[in-house]
Length: 107
Image 1 (tube, one colour):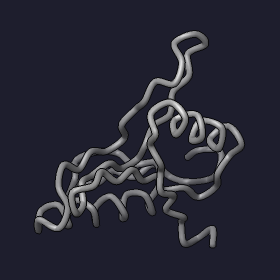
Image 2: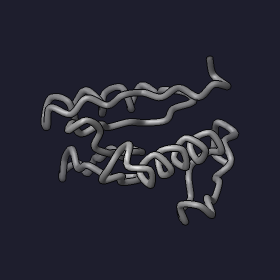
Image 3: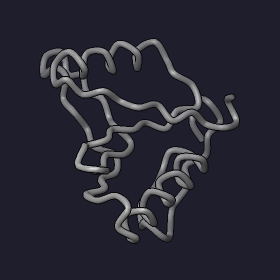
Image 4: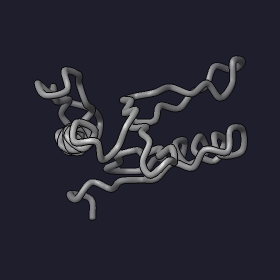
């Protein structure tokens, strides 16, 4: 369990661990969409290096291709201040916009 009381959850369908039950369910939904051909090139938990010194990175929960475009998504219960900065840093460095998927439990 992490500091926000989210419990790591293993997906038998996908075969990997997710940070929370909600993230797991969302990831399994994307996995099934990929299997039906609705999306392609699905990747889970991809890390982008923002700085080598000091060492700083951001992990994007889901990356996939839909309608010819690459989609970057993060499943968040709460967004912490350091995440906001890292997200803007990634946009500035690599022109990557991350779509936030909010946990239904957080409104």
